[in-house]
Image 1 (tube, rainbow, N blue to C red):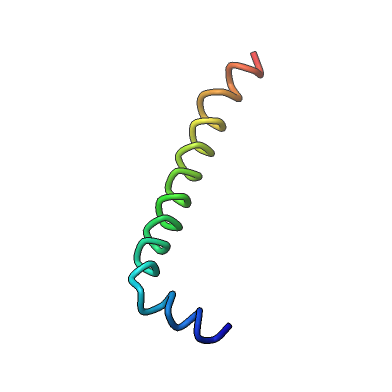
Image 2 (cartoon, rainbow, N blue to C red):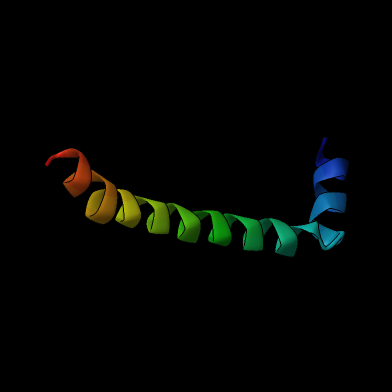
Length: 45
């Protein structure tokens, strides 16, 4: 298992994974802002 983890770290997939995590966080923030500022006021009318 440690060997597989070492291959994962050195394989360059770590940067792709980090970018994916950052993008997911940013998209989550955009969706949360959209829902709280656009959708909820319309639903609450």
